[in-house]
Image (cartoon, rainbow over all chains, first blue to last red; front, side, top):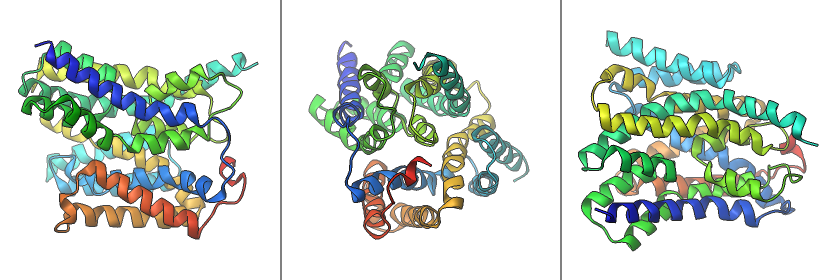
Length: 100
Length: 240
């Protein structure tokens, strides 16, 4: 059963290397405009891709999740805090799942 | 010279980390349930969460271990699923305050998850490592605790509460991307296109066979790449 610890350590080593290599190897500011722009856009695209449509299947009810998504988008647009947006989305899903 | 600010940055990070911790607790709880089904003990599952801190990677890892894949196969699979962290790491490397010594990057690297990266990169100006540490200090323990309780308690937490909590993470992503999208039309367009294409890759025949890890990598590289060529950012615009 020690095998499972080797599995876990293999996963951990690969994941840590992926995370830490660019961070430690790229110390200077990148001057290339296209690369800078690419890296600037990466987080927004990645987070958008991961959010939708994955949010729809995260809960027990797709419609509740969709309304939670809409409410989160509106609140975030109005610059509410991370915590307010998250908690309100959870509350919307919780209430709608009771009704639907 | 940073000591005065470090505490403030750390506390700001803790504040940013609280919604992450809530979301992590719910997600890792379901991870714990999956681990238990695969015959993994609470200690092993918690050890996995503490050393890996990655939802998609751990979910895939559990089913792979269950199926008895080779170490090489497992390593390749983790590399593919978690490749997006490499892009995030590159992006973060450009944002860190360069006056901090190198060892901070080795510690911060451990904490690059979708969510901790998201709140860290959203900080205006240069990033202090202490902000990231603050976010890590609340979210990683919650990730481990949730995993442990998921194995031990299984189905004690009502299903509707787990269900509602699982949108917390997405709510947080939305809160990160919407304010810049409101200020910058290019970002707004990218967010909309990203969501539409992501839906296409999730539901359309053939495209839906691509794993979710690969989907994120392909779409990120293509969309951000095309945008970088068509709409290059002027110098220093990203620090404002």
